[in-house]
Image (cartoon, rainbow, N blue to C red; front, side, top):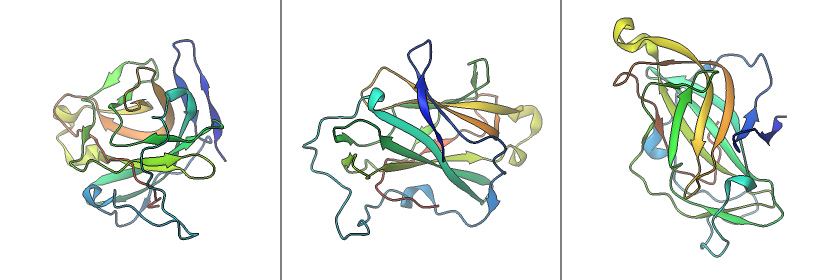
Length: 195
């Protein structure tokens, strides 16, 4: 279980993982461009909505680390996006901004690039969540002097069309802190988990 995100003094919400989470298990990761295909729910319904519900606000969302896999020189971290309010809301596309931060809030490296797919609208709430995957290139694949590897403490997120931000805490992620090396990549939202 994950603790619920809580507002901080800057108006952000922070999702916390359990301490001592093990490093990602080795495995074969699905390429990011294939991660956004819509999938049927277990009961035969579809998590993709028609956009009738209003767009999700940051205050409605809880974002947590849903696990990760590793392969092809990268780590793939899945984010679970849940609606903690009583009202369904729609999410579509990508986070407006995704970047790794030090514990003091200073950015590490460049903001994550987005994948090419647009994604379909997903109505979340009442047990239906959305998911997105962050691909983190392994710092070991780069010249250390060009990468400047450093441990990240927070993943900083800006949900679509929102100014309020959300931070997810991590204790086992190392990224390139230098600009232009090892840039992460974020997939579009999708209705199914891949871990």
